[in-house]
Length: 206
Length: 430
Image (cartoon, rainbow over all chains, first blue to last red; front, side, top):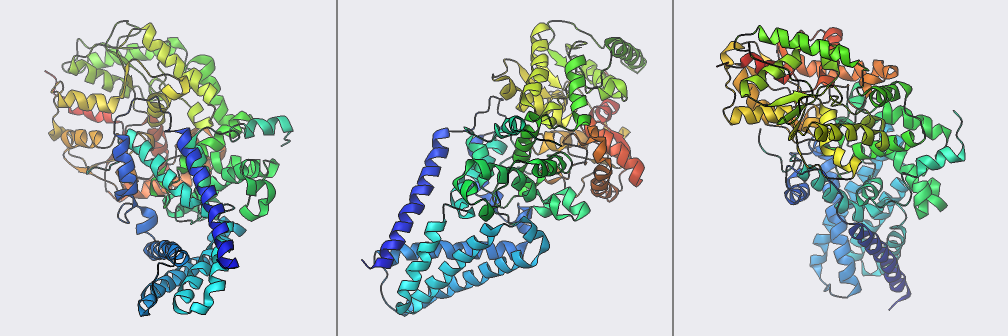
């Protein structure tokens, strides 16, 4: 194992330990304690929260902001793909060949959209008012990760820079808002639980 | 404002040593995407970046980060972690009490799923622990605790109003035997009131009494504890909320009633039905439903019959946030209206997406924010005007109050009524 791969794997260990610790902590605290008599079904609400409630049709934050919403979705898909590619690189499961261009292009598009989101945060006064340094750094680190993934897919000699960018991201993960990778799922669960018990979700025609 | 360590620690108690997975989650989940801005009436009406819901989450979560997270303790500047000091408290009071109706519209549309209204409630809880609830709102809570109802109505005045309403009701066709029973034990239903009813809108009491009479219900009002409201839900003080909720629970037992029927009051029904058992730390051993559900039940069971041909004027409806978005009472009032009036028109948007009237979250009690309250209400007024309706129905007395003020200010040209009044007018008395 080369030194920079070792650093990246150490970062992965830190990142995963943090994520697992916080996820287990939430699990151990258990379901929300609600003594009021339910008029709905919390499981249906949770299912709805992760499915239809996320669709652009049902979320104002999506249908009123389709360009940003679409950019965000593609950006995140590129992140998921890049994470999968990281494991493929580490385990040497990714064969050589021209097909590497396809994921590289997708990740590059994702990165371009991620940069657009960052530019929006910088340019819009109301976004700047909401932002702290972590908001910029987190976005920047993810974009560097995406760009280096794309470059590494195309240029093998980019390997060291790729692993160093991954390391930066992984070591930074526990510090800032990247933690939403854990809390996003918990938030959707809790929202589904809340609206499910109260019969608001799943939404029915009325 | 001076803040000593003892006071500050009382505020921080709410955030430290958390055992609430829901609160931990929502304090950590916001990514500051800002897409919630367009779901908030305050931001839409005033285009002020301070009013973006994420900012309201941030004012609480930044304090949480400062005292409860590694990064916030050692690198506060990186994540915008803030001390709970005088400037942050001034901002908290202004944003959490003065710029949020806790309507939850931003919550249901949040891109992540952050329960923004819950975080605002948590912030209000911190401020209540520090005795920083706006005096106007606190005085409403105090009135309820000291006198048994938030408008401090003396029992004699209530009894006089009820007797007057009973006489009026008996003059109506088919109601000569109708009664408004007071403090009668062993009845099926204990019906509550919003103190605004005996004080300003007594006709809604006789309307509900007419419905009970038509349905042949066994019911009573209580003179000791009839107030459905619980403004401590808005002030954020769980101990005071517990006292108020506990009184109604006790009265149910005193009168040995089987069902507690919550009057048309959005926050009141939420505070007792959904939050009450949690304030009191126990499940209720009696049935608790809203009057909207009860009237719907009567109609479904054929206990009341309705004639829609009597009301031909165009009618629209305002959905109270706590009843609809946070209470799941969505279709019942619509089905009833479809059978009570000829021309029912929905606003855009409506149902769980509906905008707050602007009077929620205790805004009607906090006169210092009147200007903002009316400004955000313009959005609602325009929504109503666009329907062309002549009558505006809402199953919430708090909303009625705000909508009547909007009616005067923005010339909506509507009559504001409760659901019970509309149903009572459509009743076929046999």
